[in-house]
Length: 273
Image 1: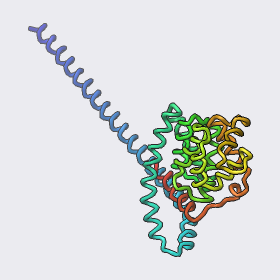
Image 2: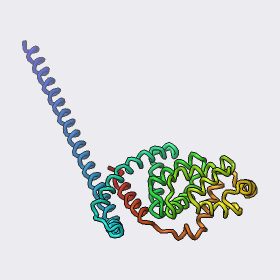
Image 3: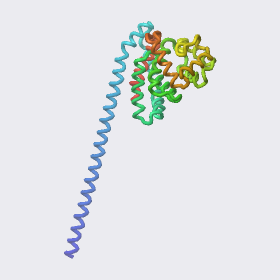
Image 4: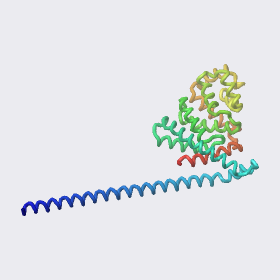
């Protein structure tokens, strides 16, 4: 009987010990979950504060531009702001879609974000070029086997052409430039290019040293002579000609492109949200 009683006491102590261990483990798990939840809330709070600061900074930066634009158009500030908000929300979604495409070219999300930062800077420094447009053209030119170094040189040229005279469809214009080379400078393609941008036609005459931007036969012969038979080589020459053209070098933002720049700044600020 004494042996059974001692054994029962040992059993009771073991059960109590197990219960204490289980309670301690449960409490530890609760505390860990509580700490994780607090950390997550703090991280979300920091992210929200950062996004708020980004938007505030963007609006502070574009404030003078909006006021100037409003004065120039002699209308109140409400209409531009409404248009700005709607355009920015749509453009922010478009940027995300374009960055996903860029990720396929660069091979990683980190590389795509670095490239996006470069294109944002190029867009802000170039009349007639926005971030979304730069992203679209970057992907379009990569598909055409144009290297990044050449893309960085030709984007400002296309942007400035767009600032001088608004291009109806910048993507189509760029594809037209690509097609000049891939279709061996067909007369119809040259005519279409000149129709979209007479100044681009002027660049063609300067690049190939011909009398007319639609002289397909002469341009074809000069392309072989100058070695401009690949898309990348042609775009390099196009960028060089644009960089020497005073009309493009001295171009400034119009009212329309200034508003596009304002939308672009807000769009970039909204994207993290």
